[in-house]
Length: 162
Image 1 (tube, one colour):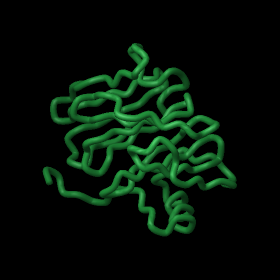
Image 2 (cartoon, rainbow, N blue to C red):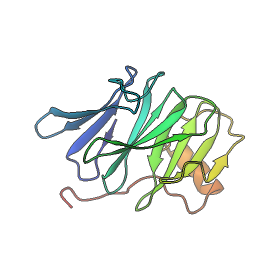
Image 3 (cartoon, rainbow, N blue to C red):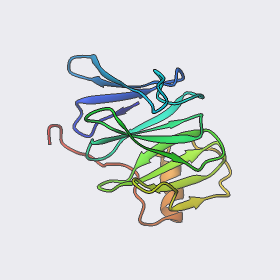
């Protein structure tokens, strides 16, 4: 799950393949994100392993066992883009601050760097010894900063309501 940069929303992903957005102050569901294939699920199979808000809160990314990442419009719940490139389950996803750069970690032991709006990854980090389940971990941050010095993977601290 992930909390929006303004602290007002939470998005969850689960093994039932659903991505759901929640309003924290009222503790109520706002919407379920439905995919492009007419199903009540966000992904075809494999469960949703990770979700992330973009740093402006306008987009939500979901990573799945179906080897895809989906980018959703947070304001209307519509599917914006589907990213495919991993050969294994996508276990984690994270946006770079103030940009449309996204990183995904997979069971195929690669990290793909994506630019939202482009249908292919812009960089692949391979030869990683383990599959990463969390791109925001300290170990992952060190690995990525060594491999891609300009890549920072968290939105940083923001004041609520800003």
